[in-house]
Image (cartoon, rainbow, N blue to C red; front, side):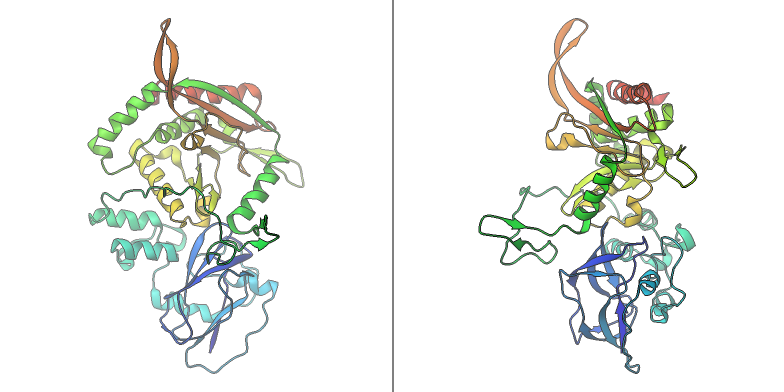
Length: 433
């Protein structure tokens, strides 16, 4: 009998919630079969079995949040029964799911020999969401060359392989449902939703955990540690709308969803190159503070998902062509809406865009993502009267606003940056320079 402890999925996380069991006692499982879905503070993850055999006991119920290292399931593999030891902090640091890495050095001096069969029998290093993507696209992982660290197969590797096989065409980004909000029933809460605590007939309290817990902590930390300053500018975005219309009609973009966010992303990348401090970060250390200037852009896109607000980022966005950036934005959006954004995709961002225009908002004062010095908000793009050559005409108008860490960048720099972003939205041809 083998016992499987909740592993660290590779980002130094300390706890997770068992969302849904995919197996029941008595089921037969093979190595790498999905046992359950867990919700960490950053993503929804499928846990594969490191053992082959018959499912014994499910040790944790659905909807329960537990610490890394906690026993969650037993599997009878024909070996002699062994009583599982109580998890310790040292165990929690060393219980790492194969294929995820550790997100740092493993703190445990002991290895978990029970996890070795995953690597031995699978032969390909890939995270469970990547394996599911490969299954959905009909891709044989054994034929995919991994580009990640230690040869890990990434999402881009799978999609690239699928494109070569002409099986990844015309996939549409799913639309939001008509229901924007829902009330969690007190009597029968969904397995994946936080169970409300009944306070009275007129009120209820919902436990704060998962994405909401991490988001709230990060926003409080950012708001009370970085001195925020916000500036904004109204923009005639008519030429941006014309460019979006032409790109949608272009055969080169026929299989990609194009929106004004694409032009906004290119504008932010272009403007950040001209004002590098908006892409920098304030770093506190024992020997004094410093400003980290980054000569690359990991472009974060704030995404409102069914699980809450997350900010995945596009790595090295400055090196992407217009088409490549459009594809990256589409994949980022699709993955976020499916709740499959990997923790690594939410780390090491350098500057963020939040598209509040999709909610009908004109402008806002966004809070800076921790570890960054700037965040830019794109407001709604609507037709308004605008003076052109002394005449009032209907034009597509939007507002660009941005919040900045005043420790890193001063008023002239942040104003110049927002002005540059606005100039691109007014005249996208400047991107050809």
